[in-house]
Image 1 (spheres, rainbow, N blue to C red):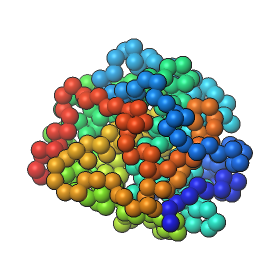
Image 2: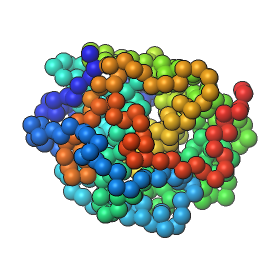
Image 3: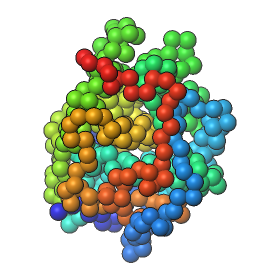
Length: 366
Ligand code: C2O
């Protein structure tokens, strides 16, 4: 049977762990603000009409005007009180709550985990969908769209921290990052992302680029079935209590490799478990998290368009009917299904290519 929505009245402190730090943990109360569960709204396309397309662009190419708007959106979100479901604090807690054991699968004592399986891509698509709608509604701009951190682009600057996130003191800044990564493209020698966790510190810039292309090729091209790329089946009763990022047999290639690599690379080596980005409990406290996941979401679409293999979403009912809860821009608690997230154009989303450097890993044979 598919995963159904959890009972939100049963919440426990979440426990964060990280593969690089065996035995270490971070206990956090990230329970969602009390809401009346009798008023859960079922998602329907007609209740969320597309007024204007949301055109998601590469962050390193954003115009000064767009950067200003992006800043304003996060300022407004950060200014909301922390019990407001639209606040930045609650937005961050949503990630913690469904990843680190705060909620259990309904009528069981089994942790609800949205990572390491076929739920990963659709859950995060819904998450950024509502996050983006909230930011747009705070701005009063229904066309507002998230930017994507184009870290797979090794050609024209996508592979560093985008400059808008590296301005100390802005609403897009997070001091809990690796200090070197946080220099972003502003640095004269911009630090390059490492898509491989455990990449050797001694690599030259061109070796880093080769390594990144290699990781991308394997995650996107070699992984030619949904099972490999998106991850394996997770249904009601699947118990991931012993599964973590370094031991996740059902995890998909994009999630476990480049996606995880970016989390690790961005997090602060001096912080507990390399937070913020390095551990689920705190990752979404960094505004760059949402731009990171916008790129992951874009790459899901790119993967489907690559020739060869069986690159289609699963059709299993346990996948299509899996349910999640989110807050929308009016603070409604909304129940969504995986099946409604599979066509991003139906959600009003469009991805604009970066000028150069799109998907050059496609032709990179390791
Ligand atoms: Cu929910 Cu990037 O992880």
